Amino acid sequence: MKKKQARQVKGANNVFLDLGFPPHEAAVMLLRCELAEALRQWMDREAITQVEAAKRLGVVQPRISEIARNKVDKLSLDYLVGLCAKAGVSVAVKLAA
Image (cartoon, rainbow, N blue to C red; front, side, top):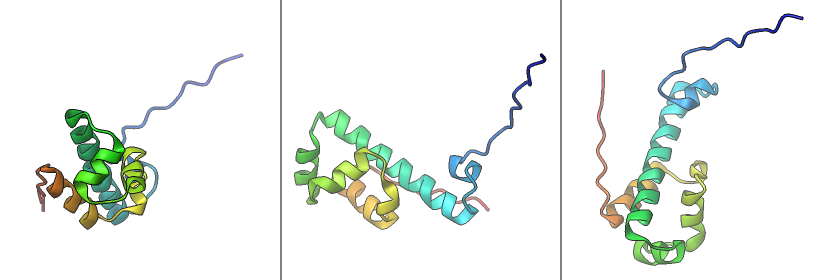
């Protein structure tokens, strides 16, 4: 019996596009994930718990848990940018035409 060879397809630079999200939603989801990752890295660098991060950022611990578990669909870009600012994490937007 002949085995079928798996077909490889080059993906986009955005996993959400690959999953079938519309381009505008995929762009927002990717940005949310990148901001959440920056906050997780900040927590690691500071060697702080979710409780301590929540205190420093002025939010409740369950919000930090959502970030830690990458549940970014529940968080707005504005909210995540604000948390990054409070944490001293620099955020920059690069636009391409």
